[in-house]
Length: 362
Ligand SMILES: NC(=O)c1ccc[n+]([C@@H]2O[C@H](COP(=O)([O-])OP(=O)(O)OC[C@H]3O[C@@H](n4cnc5c(N)ncnc54)[C@H](O)[C@@H]3O)[C@@H](O)[C@H]2O)c1
Ligand SMILES: [Zn+2]
Image 1: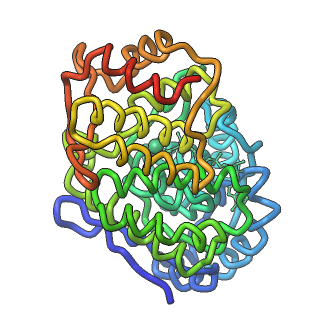
Image 2: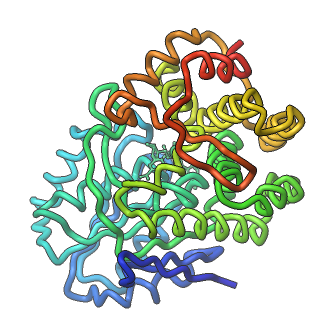
Image 3: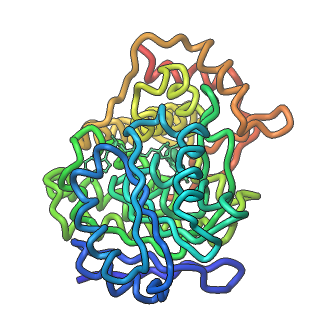
C-alpha cells in the first residue's frame, strides 16, 4: 500500500504527493527535511484539531526542534486576512524565521490560508500540506494556489506557493460528513469529464464502494484524480492555458456559490455548473440528451444536488459576467466536445447560459 506521485515544474522536481491510509509514514516523510533544528507550526481548524492534531503533533515533535499549533474556527468565513494576521502574530512571537515550516492540517480552507501565510511570511517560508477532506485531497492541495477571501470576494488575495510535501491520509475521509464527501465528488466527476472517459465510467461503476468509503477504492480514485490534476497543472502551472480546463463547471458554479452566500458547498456548485455546461453542449448537438441524463443520474448517485432553488437566471448570468475569470470582456467558458475532453469556448452566448441554467434552477 501507499503511493507516491512526484510533481514537477519546468521539468524540475518540486514535491511529492504521498498517499497512505494512515499517518504511519508521516514521520519518515518529515525526516527528509531535517527539521531537528527547525520550528514547525501546525495550522488547523476547530473541527480537525480534536480529530487529528494530537497524532500529527506527536509525530512532528519526534523530529522537529520546536512544534507549535494554531487553531482557528472552522469555516470559509475565517479564510481571510484577519485570521492570517493572528497567525503572523503567533509566528513572530514564536520567533519563526525563514528556515522554519508551516504544516496545513485540514481541508481547503486550512490549506489555502496556511499556504498564503507561508507564501508571504518573511517573503515566503516552506509549508507542508496534510489535506483531510476529499476536496482538498483531489484538488486544493495540489498545484500551489494559495489565498484568502476579501469580504465577499472569494480568493481575491493570493499567491502561487508550492508545498514541500503533500501527505494525504485517505483514512481521514472516514470522519467527513456525507455532505463534505459528496462535495469532493463534484470535483472528481469533473476530472473524469474533462480528461478521462474511462475514469468517468469507472466512478459510476464503483459508486457503492466509493459511497461506503472503502479505503482501497477511495485511494485508487484519489490517485487517479491527483494524476489528472497534476498532469494539467504541470503543463501550465500559472494558468495561462490548459489549467483553465479545470474550471469546467466553475463558470456558472462560482456565480451560484456566490449568490447562495457560500451556504452551498463548493463541489456541489461545481456539480451544478457541470450539468449546466453539458446542457449547453446538448443544445449545440454535441451530446445526446441521454448523456446529460446519465451525468445527472451520477450526480444523484453520489449525493450531489442536481437543482438549486431561489436563484434567478439573470442574477447568475450577471454574476458570471463580473467574475474574475472574465478575459478582457469575454467569458472563457469551458465546454466538452466529448466525455474526457474539454476546451475553452469564448463564444457562449447569454441565451445559451440561460438555457443551461434552466436545467438546474427551480
Ligand atoms: N487552492 C486551490 O487550488 C483550491 C481549489 C479548490 C478549492 N479551494 C478552496 O478550498 C476550500 C474548500 O475546501 P473544503 O471543502 O475542504 O472546505 P473546508 O476546509 O472548510 O472543510 C470542510 C469542513 O470539513 C471539516 N473537516 C476537514 N477535514 C475533516 C475530516 N477529516 N473529518 C471531519 N471534518 C473535517 C472542516 O473543519 C470544515 O468544517 C474553499 O475555500 C475553496 O476556495 C482551493
Ligand atoms: Zn473547484
